[in-house]
Amino acid sequence: MEFDWSVVWQALPELFKGARLTVLIALAGLAGGLLIGIGAGLMRAYGNAALNSVAFLYIEIIRGTPIIVQVMFIYFALPLMADIRINPLMAAIVSIVFNAGAYIAEIVRGSFLSIHKGLKEAGLALGLPLWKVLVYVIGPLAFRRMIPALGNQFIVSLKDTSLFIVIGVGELTRQGQEIMAANFRAVEIWSAVAVFYLVMTGTLTLVLRITEKRMPIL
Amino acid sequence: MSLVEFKNVTKNFGPISVLKDVDLNIGIGEVVVLIGPSGSGKSTLLRCINALEDINGGDLVVDGISVRESRAKVRLIRQEAGMVFQQFNLFPQMTALENVAFGPRRVRNLGKAEATEQATALLAKVGLADRGHHYPSELSGGQQQRVAIARALAVKPKLMLFDEPTSALDPELRHEVLRVMQSLAEEGMTMIVVTHEIAFARQVGTRLIFMENGNIAVDGDPAVLLDNPENPRLREFLQHVH
Image 1 (spheres, one colour):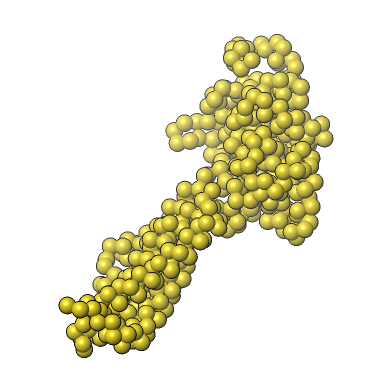
Image 2 (cartoon, rainbow over the protein chains, first blue to last red):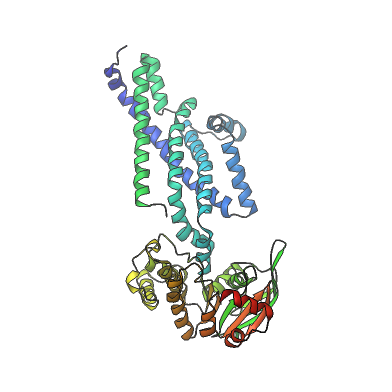
């Protein structure tokens, strides 16, 4: 068969529309997931028994179930259980935030606890409260150690947005599927979709590498 | 008036009893040198003073505040008791100057300019005026430990705690740290020093405490005890460290 470039050109506007939505969901997911992940990770690392259990339960539930089940639950089950109506895009963002948050929590916990205990003691010995020691001393060091693992998680989350095809969010994969259903040009369309994802993950990798260069692990 | 007061302090790590009913008073201006075999409880005793270790029994009062009081009060104790660690524990992402300015900025809440000014003066005091912009990884062990002393002094403590400050250093780097400590003692700083530096104990110490099995076995004048150790365990210990 012959690769027909004109099919790709014709599909580009629709694919860009989908890619925009993918980027939006992914960025919201990473920002929200980072916030929740830092919160839950610190609760696991430094919280009392109650905070620790809450964070542990959250992480176990999310890690223990497929993201596709999570988004189906939020989109289809939640409205029945709690009368919460939610549009597909919101459902997608909420799922990716909570999903990424659980994995990021473990990354945060691991890297904070990997910082030499003497540095925490040195901060405390100056008379600082623990939260200031975490913000000014441990946090900046731990963040550097998180970057490689965060990079993995960011890429996984970005690609996981393709699963939201199941609730009809018009993201990149969904757009590709719809175009394909109309013109049956599987090779051209799925190649183009793959390149779109590669460009996005490549950009993420580049941003992470630049960050890592500027903030070497100490 | 005593600055540090141990009243029947006990400390356990699980089933192991590390401090057994320790009673001790340390007054302003004293330079107390703590020696003893490893596991005798000397580092633990020091770390109880600024509440890096919780005590299990008795009471420990530092500058009028008990270590058993609220966390906010314990922070006041820590601000009055500067600590120098065996492994220096400088903050690796900060330059020497930023390390020293950290306490004034984040503990005493001074502005950046004022904190930097104080830090510069303190670095000069420990002989490192020209090393302010170096990161800890670019400094020798002796230099790092002097920065660590300056960092502790920057919070303006009434008391300095030294936990084996020269044990991680090469012999030729020890003296530069010991000299800084000696000049600090000569200025009248109250100091409690866990060390194996017997010469420092003799020259600078005003009081020598020998610990054994969680007890204070011997407590007295360094010169007298070192020249004529009556306690047989102290005599044996000194033979090994000399």
